Image 1 (cartoon, rainbow, N blue to C red):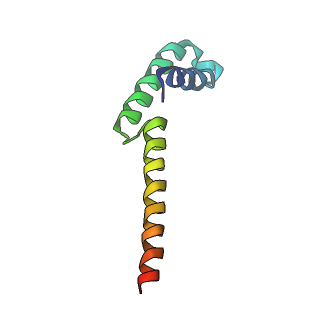
Image 2 (cartoon, rainbow, N blue to C red; image 1 turned 135 degrees about the vertical axis):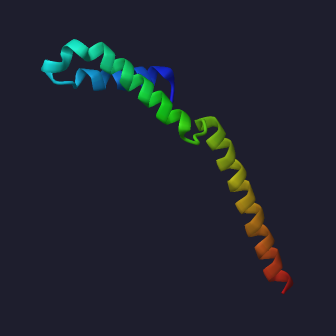
Amino acid sequence: MTDESIENIARKLAEAVPEGLRSVREDLENNFRSVLKASLSRLDLVTREEFEVQEAVLAKTREKLEALEARLEELQ
């Protein structure tokens, strides 16, 4: 998740704050941003690119496994 995405989420959360709390909106937005960054940093996430590379590797591995299974069937 990019910093821009985190900024957008924090801004939207701050905008959703009731009118009576608007005076602390900037502080809330900063707190939302900090909590989001801290929470996301604890997650074990990969980039889309890394995911797609692993997906391709898995697809090739499945193809090879299916070919080996078919060959084994022929030999038995």
